[in-house]
Image (tube, rainbow, N blue to C red; front, side):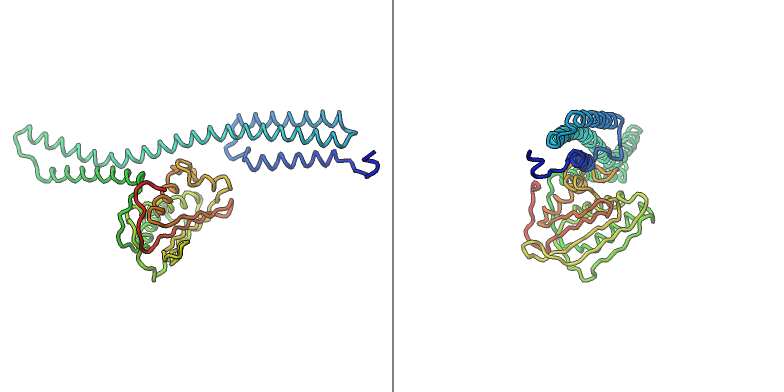
Length: 330
């Protein structure tokens, strides 16, 4: 009666189309079919697709002549499929995240072992030589004693550097950001080769800031490494410096690193500053989180702008002067 009075059109096909559009939107939003499509994901997808086809056929068979029940049935099946898809994808992403964390921990451990291995090898060699000299009744060689002391100092520096990465304790001194950036870019170009075209726009009138040169050099190196890893087949990299202001109006200097890589989707941007969550295929997941902690410990800020297919821009601001935030990161 209501249908005849209001002349309600048949909504069965419209409901089915809307339901399919909802499923497609969620599938792409959750990246169910990512680049690394595994066999288990494919089986889940086929099972969900088969279930949806059977469900929709049953609904159309039973309620084909009743528009209201047809829309209700298709919507119910769609919601059930969405819930199942989200559960499956959430479980897969959790397992993938744990695997990535273990991989990142392995890379971090390997880097630490590499940093400790060289001074330990030199120290061991010098100590063995001294033992041989003493066993043959000859006095210890002064140059080898100095070498051993130098390697012990190197070990202490490595341990201190890794400790400062976790605590983030800046030791400020006058710093010319342009010089630090130019040296980091030159070093990275020498290591990576000419595949990436680099355009530097360093403000010649940039004033000095007060910062820890060692910690900040690590930040810049990480940003450049991320940019290069985002462009494995080559691309364009822009590095710019200039004056800026912090939110409170304090004078600051600014560094922007812009790459033409694949960029990031919304989910990657949300987790970019999570520890051990790499933003590039070969990353450790420590670069951006550590960079932000270091910059914030200096009283500055770090901003990430990225869009899928349009590259990534990382901008850091450092105050020219002012009290530093030391101790644990915020």
